[in-house]
Each structure stands twice: as C-alpha cells, then as structure tokens.
Length: 447
Image (cartoon, one colour):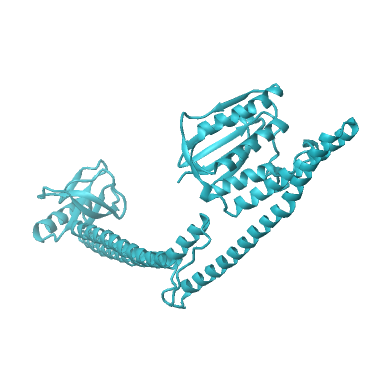
C-alpha cells in the first residue's frame, strides 16, 4: 500500500495508540513510585514498632513510656513518629503534639510533631496494648508525598503534551487526506448542483486517491452519457406524442364545431377530455424527468415566495369555496429566494389539487424560514396517508387506491419531490395538526 494512502481511521488509531501508550507508561510509573514509597514507610514503621515493644520486657506501660522518652531524648528521630495514647485519645508520651481524629491501620494522616510548626504527612502503625493503650509507630512521609505530587503533576503535564503531539499528528494526517480528497469532493459537489461537465483533475501519483479520482471520472462520464440520452429520449417523446395528441385535440375541437347531434358532441367532448388528460400526464412525466436530471437550474430567478403563495391562493380560492371549505395562508411579509417559478407554481398547485380532491376541512398553506431553509407546507384535515404508504405516494404513478378518484395518474407528489430535488431540497409527509389529515412540507435549501 502506498504510504500516502492513509485514512482518517488510521490517523485516529495513531492518536489513540500514542495517548494510551503515554498514559499507561506515565500512570504506571507513578503507581510504582507510590507503591515503593509506601512499602518503605511501612517497613520502617514495623521495624520501629518491633524495636519499641522489645525494649521493656517487664514493667508494662510505664516501662514502655520510659523507653520511648529515652529513645526520643537519646537518638535523632530521623523522621520517626512515636506516640503512646490512652483509650481517651490523650497522648501519654511521644513526639506527636496532637493525634489526628481518625486513625486506622497503615493510614497516612496529617500530624504535627512536637517542636514542628507545620503539619506533616505520616504513616502510623497502631498496636493495641493489653491495658487498652495504643502504641503508634511510624515515619514522616511528607517529603515522599511532595515528591509523589511532583511526579503526578509531571505526569499530567507530560500526558497533556502527549495529547497535543498525538492530536497534531492526527491533524496533519487528516489534513493530508482531506487535501487529497478535496478535488473529488469539489467535483462531486459541482455535479450535485447540476454541472455534469465537472471532472476530478488527473493525478499521476498512482495511489488509491488517484485511482478513486479515475473511477469517479469514469462514473461521471457514464452519467453524462445517460443524461444526454435521457434528454434525447424526452425530446423525442415530446415530439412523437405531444404533437399528434395536440393535433388530435385540435381536430376534435373542429369536429365539435361541425356537429350538432348531442350524443356525438358528448362523445367528442369525452375524447377531447381524455386527450387533454394524456397530454397533461405526458407534460408532468416529462417535467419530473427533466427536474430529476437537473434541467431548469439556469431558469432560477429571485422570487417573492410570500407573494407567490398569495397569487396561487387567489387562483385556487374559488375551487376551494365550491367545496364549502376554507383556505388559510400563513406567510411572512416578504421572503426572497431563487427558484424556478413555473415548476414551483406547478408543484404547489399539485399539492392544493390533491387536498381539494382527497382531503377535507380547512386547508393551510404556510411559508416558514429557519436554519438556512425555506419550508412551504400544505395541510388539511382529511384521511391522510398511512405511514407505510407514504414512500409509494412519492413515487411516479404511485396511486394508493382506485377509490381516490379516476382522473389521477399518481404523478402529483412525484413532481413535487422532483421540484424539491431540483432546488436541493426534500419533501416530507406527516400528520397534520392534532394528528389529523396530511401535511406535505416542501423544504428548500437557501443558497
């Protein structure tokens, strides 16, 4: 594998290995130092206790007290801590001015020795005597504690430095990877915005990143070819189907003008309506294909979305009133965004058509802006669409059931989704207010 074919996961692994290794080494060293220091102090305390208990073979506690006084008077204590304490906690004899309130076996406590102004850390080893007194023998470990604290601070500082160095190594590795991938990311971003001519610049290094760029370019070449074939096919479809159907409807119009018999006129009107329906289906299907292929972005222009919704509402208001229903428009005073006005009008019109045909109750047409996106929603109080059928409702020719009407072709929501895709957005289907009806939200990403 080429050394330059590193990945972000490898960089993260290097970071973790460096941090874990440093932490184990440093904290392990600190633990060894603490353990060794405590073992030495404990060994010293045990030796001191045994020496003291061996001095007065007879005489009991008074003899032990005299032995302690003689030891403290005659010998340099070298950090020795000795105290003979009665059951009430009073120090009978020793070099400890005040005993700590809590004392347990092998516990390091802060004490103040006689003749010393500052408290010191000491390890005390208690031994219960037959008369109830307690002999405490131990050693001052203040210097050890200070040394251990210094080691701990040095450990934390070294670990912090290790973290910085490991983070720097991971950052450099990640930057290198991102730098190698940036051209591919930029190219795919441009393609996602509709520029199918973008390609990854050639790289002669021959590593995995270069091979990735070559494969991306091959895929984009294939997409461009298929897209061109789609455009040719749609143009041919428009020419081969729309033109004859247009001539057919025109011929039916002329025939209707020359026929007076009611039955014949009714038959001609029916044929004309079916022809117009087929033309509408073809127009919608072509619009979906072109929108999904990214055609139309060059027609984007700034538009006042609030004014657009008001205009659409005025057009559909009579149809809604004929159904004894009401339309409520909620939109800010002015919201400008670049859109394909014709397709957006058609998409919102399809949503209103659907709620007029299949919904019930009040219709809400709302416009909101937040978090860098625009949300246009249409909601009603009808039966809605079950959760398991919403994906089908967004597909082309995705009619949910035959009972929803005989004129639909299942293209309305598919066109809305295609228009959203053209604008870099999405379509969400959800329940309306209070869990009733259907709310369709068209989300558009603002530039």
